Image (spheres, rainbow, N blue to C red):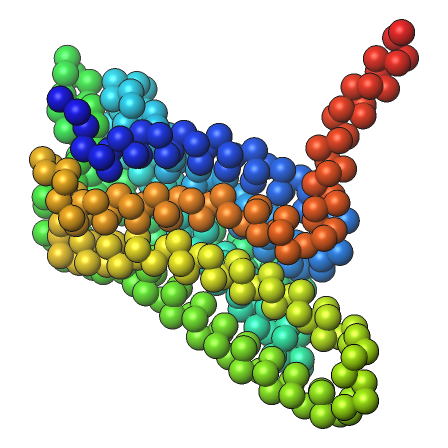
Length: 326
């Protein structure tokens, strides 16, 4: 019996994004940690953190869950205890990815719109503190995931698989947890990113109009270094946050509707429109873990140059070693 189309697509889709996304994010981290991309250390810290969480999303959500546990249901990850750990880290990696994007958006808003706060807020110390604080809070907030699931079956005393525990899902703690997950993973981050981007756009338009007036009509053809630098920063901000919103939108809407309605898990009809929308949303959401590397390459000239150097370095070292032994 042939699999439903959406399940055939996911069998092909997840290995492809894993094969591309894992090396892409590793390469992004290496390039950014070299510190030669012309970016401030503050921005670099946020971008490294985002690449790291994207890598974790691919490892736990895509490889561990959607490839290994889905394709090999009797692997070691299908033990109940391992399954709970995978689900826990799936949630933490996704939430940290979301909130690191929010931190990056807020940092760029302050840098562009709040000059008085820029010197105090847009620092490496603030970036590191924000990154660590978000990671700790998310990991604490996701602890109930370790108690939400129970084994699917017990075979010869060994617990296999995970399924939602009915007592947890119907209890006050479970309902509250589901509600907080919807707020913290979908609603609040989207509102914050949209709000700060709108405020940034408003500030940019006003500043550009004022600056053009001060420079006069006679200098319209001359390049403005400050505006050029600001333009690059804006392109980076809007492409990162814009792609995040577009790719997460389907998953966010599906997550809110199914989670709050208590229909987040499907059994049986894999052609149901709600199931198809949920699976499509997941695929787009996980695709966002591969896009930042492409965005940096497309929008940052120095990043592209560093990528070429990093890719050439192993081959250059190999050729030097070969020549020495010839």
